[in-house]
Image 1 (spheres, rainbow, N blue to C red):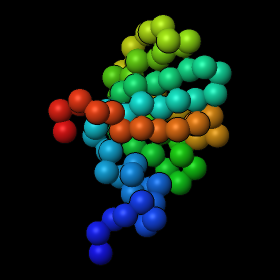
Image 2: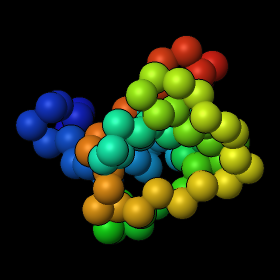
Image 3: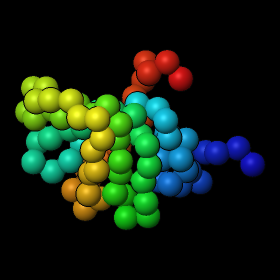
Length: 83
């Protein structure tokens, strides 16, 4: 059965985004953009080569970042990541 918006599950979206660029919006006007390396059922997310963006300004790039799931507002697979 093809995936329609009614039967797409959040974990399916994360699974399909593994090893691809994602944008994560978190509490406190922060965003992280990087390659999705892993996640768990609590939405704890590990990114590689992650940029931290605060109030629209890039504050730094980190080799690896763990974003705690209870801070996540949304996760979006990035367009234009070559995949």
